[in-house]
Length: 129
Picture 1: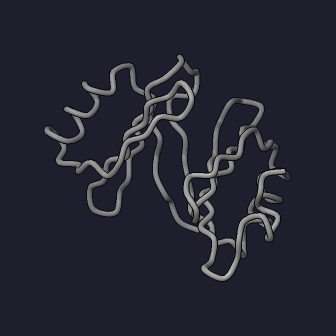
Picture 2 (picture 1 turned 90 degrees about the horizontal axis):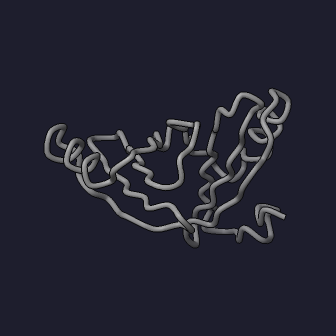
């Protein structure tokens, strides 16, 4: 398991982009819209920052970790045992799925699972159902 990215809620995506790209030297990786959130992924070296602009949230940032498909269930069990509840599952693309967990204080951890080339999410029980 390793840190995949750090998500930061911002009040202005354009201002945050200028700060991270122009001032701090990050490079644009991709952008997307999910429901009512606009998201930009920026990278500098191995560090990936996810800038999120959407509805006001009390959670200013979240931690996302990469987990291999073989270890996802043990990571989920560990989070459950430590008071985290699964609140959302998002299919990012054909090879990545995110599981969002929140504890009773609003702390969020995102597990980013990359499927192996030999499986499909639906067959491995990672379909979020």
